[in-house]
Each structure stands twice: as structure tokens, then as C-alpha cells.
Length: 107
Image (cartoon, rainbow, N blue to C red; front, top):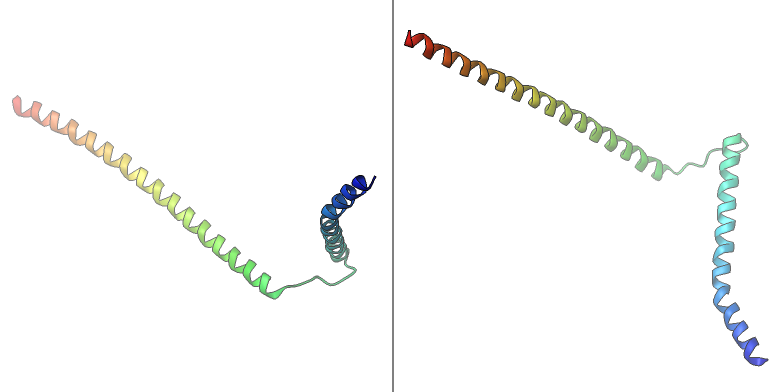
């Protein structure tokens, strides 16, 4: 009987910290959710963290710059593709003119 109670005590002791962590997480999650709902319903003022808001704005600006760079790179690739197509057409035209000029010289 004492063996069973000793193993039960060990199991409870092992699970105890996990249960405490779960309780702490549940409380903090409940408080955050409650605060968020109250903010959305207008019952309380919005919680503002100036430092985090500044970092978020910097990240948004960085994102805008990268999107602009991506747009410019796509535009550059499109222009380069058009340049290569024009070069191929010019090459074909020069080859055609070269063949015709040889034919004219032979006559």
C-alpha cells in the first residue's frame, strides 16, 4: 500500500509544475482575450505599446521598399526580355539582308 501511495505522490509531484504552468497560461490567455474583446467593443481604451508600434511601422516601411524593389526587378526583367527579342529579330533581319545581298552580287 505504501508503494502505491509513494508512486502516486511521485506522479503528482511530477505533474504539479505542469498543471501550474497550464493554470498560469490559462489566466494570462483569459486576461488578454478579455482585454481584446473590451477594446473591440469600445468598453476600454486601446492598449498601446509605443516601442512595438514603432518597430511595426519600420517593418511596414521595409516591406514597402522590398515590394518596390521587387516591382522594379520585374520591370527590368521584362525590359531585358523585350531587348533580347528585339536583338533576335534584328539578327534575323541582318541575316536575311546578308543572304539577299549575296544573291544580288551574284547577278
